[in-house]
Length: 330
Ligand code: PBG
Image 1: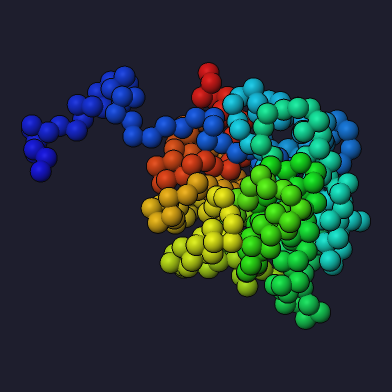
Image 2: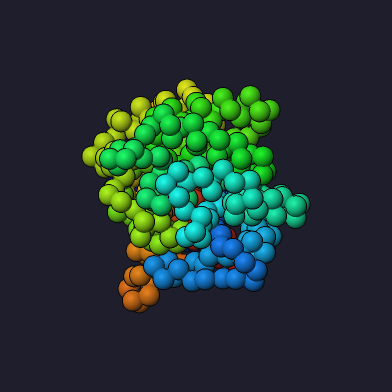
């Protein structure tokens, strides 16, 4: 039993900055950050994303510059997303399998630059489909699970061939991690990691991302038949268990801030590398308040990221990656 007041005064350890630093239970460093980047076609192109102040879509030459900056700042990994031109969007999302698509070209360009940075590539069809769903759909609009999984495994292979270090299936189809792992093993990609979007919830917080990759306008209906229901927590553990059994090296919970309880349960139960995605809507929410002068950007950013570490994360995908890494360096 701890003594009680006045023998115990918890404020003693908070009195000075040196003391607060000494008793800190968790740390945040640039190595905790994974930086998502949006790719567009062309050269020397950058486009602002209105719902994500401070985030831009970049042409591949600028993506390579961002990768260099990441290395400089100590950010270990980039997550790439394409804004596919309208004319390449089809019902079957075939552009996902084009070895010369934006994702493959950007991955190759970063690899060619010889940069020591991980490249994480999303596997899902939504940036490529005319209906904005992550998988294939039937004539009456149902998601075709097994048919989708076959295409997603092909997509993963195309990305691995382009040089992706981490395949991150974000589609939430049943059985996709196993199919991707099998394909990668068969084709000799023994060292390509899989970070499964294991517990990915159907969320209102993805809105700005859908603007960023341009899929929002296309999306027919919602994603509730494959993404998880926010009412569920035990089910997240079953999703994680399945993905690990199928060959995932690490798992992700998404969104982040409204689901910190899920992160803690996943970490305590499985003790595997666990990541969170602080998604576009979370970033937008903080930046909107900052824009209105309601909260301090730097403090809110670091506090939100420390929350992920405290909840048990090994790292966080965050649109604040560059700003946070810069701030921590200074
Ligand atoms: C696509 C995908 C989404 C995000 C990452 N991959 C959107 C969605 O599922 O609709 C969201 C990321 C964010 O909001 O920042 N499967």
